[in-house]
Length: 263
Image (cartoon, rainbow, N blue to C red; front, side):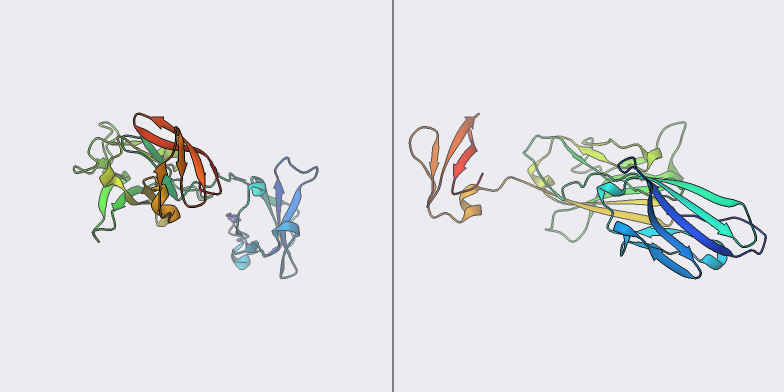
């Protein structure tokens, strides 16, 4: 989280305070303070917050690691310089997104959303988004969807590129590029779509990468290593040491409840 005093005066920073206000606690929380050449993280932020800015250059930027849900809120940076009564303040809003699954299980014909968001305190906009696909059978990646700001025509609203092969006319942008969100929707999923999808989203020279594996539901018998899987009576599956009730929908059986086995 950036916090830099822009000044031509040669006055040194003597104190830096980082404070969190998130509405969950009666009082604001101290995250970290710097004084007398010592950087001190406090409370639950010990071992997770670090002063990474160059104090000699009036930079009190903070690095927060292992971000948790309770860390969400407004961070106030206060910088005091030598022989100055004025305090420089900067507010940084931190939004913690829920963790998305790295593996998505889908069925043929489904539509599946795949998220890709660049969370950054830098005041920069997305310059490029690349969605790539690898089936694992070939080393070469395929382009799924691409956005390039440099080739974007605001009048024609062109600058998006879709693969003309397997993904043609099946990928739509769901996210808001202006908000650093390059999430997509893959429609009418096919068996050949199973594999690894990698999103690379760029803010100038900054890059964020996310990988999602698209897979099919596993076969119960092979997954659990059962010697035998058979239908006994109406609506029940039996294996080595378990049984499960199933629901038949369009000729396909779906496990509902089980005992001593998969659920």
